[in-house]
Length: 411
Image (tube, rainbow, N blue to C red; front, side, top):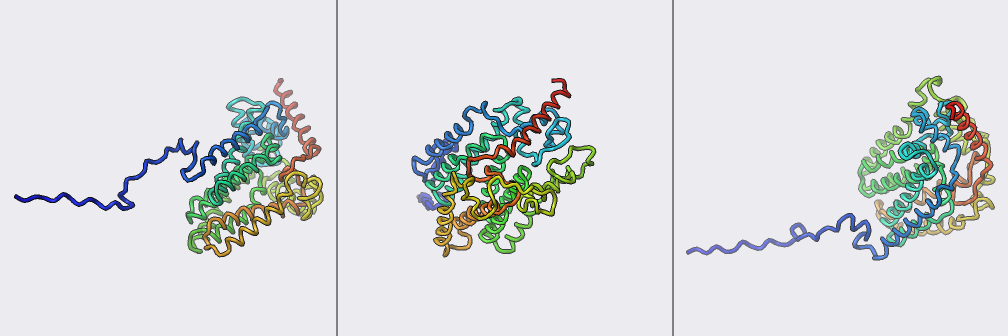
């Protein structure tokens, strides 16, 4: 009689070892990653709750920016006014910005009705979303403590609270630019094209929120990917070329459509000198902001300097320096020290790439805002002071147009 030996026990290697049951996504949402300290996720939720309270407290008392509020109101009465970002429902003239932020508020107003909290709901949402997104980005490369500090500083910076309780387009702009940074850093780590394209699309939509201000970070984005992406040089150049096409398309589609429509069939482009969006891009919202009244391209920025005289000291003058400019020297020292410490790291080092991105973002904005000779408002940077006189004229015009619109409708 033949006895068969039992089959050999399979070797328990990494491929066959019984896997630990994965933690559910819902549980991780509240408890965080297993490797995180137990305090990390509760701290994040506390910061997000604090941000929500600060940004949403007593929203019915928020006056907002009447200039943009009027355009949102007009967009609830006319889809034509909605598309063009027209100041009046008759679509006579547009505001001096592209309409993406107006669309976000306008959709909320169309769903929930026109009112203060309906316009502010998207702004509070993207404001809190920016805090959560910044936490995730910083935590990935520098750890939980750094991510928590970054989220708390963004939450409590006075202008963050002020601008997220307003109907200016800046909260949407910041959120889209952070989305672009998140996708870029993913593209750097993986070397893949798709995240880089999404980064370009996010910046393109940011362009359709506040035009050239969204492009200030582009030199840093291009440099970081070209230097640090986990791909060959040829592939990096090819991917950047494809992403540039995506950037152009996502930035220019609305502008091209509007400028192709006969002037008699659309509103006048507010802020332009020749009734084209292109003039608004390179003029009032472009080179006019940099060179002021001396700009020879498009409409000038009128040489207004609500933040004080241009120059490298502007961020520290009596208007701009009263809130958080004291942090700039510390940030510069920390940036330099971090880059030195990562000096021997491989080209694709993720931490150095992140330092290059955030440092480049800081340096480019510091130089742009310091040296800009055109229209410059203190709320562009972390200060609480706001120049209300400059907004007053626009708000008066908006109120007159809203009143005229109501009279024409017989309201």
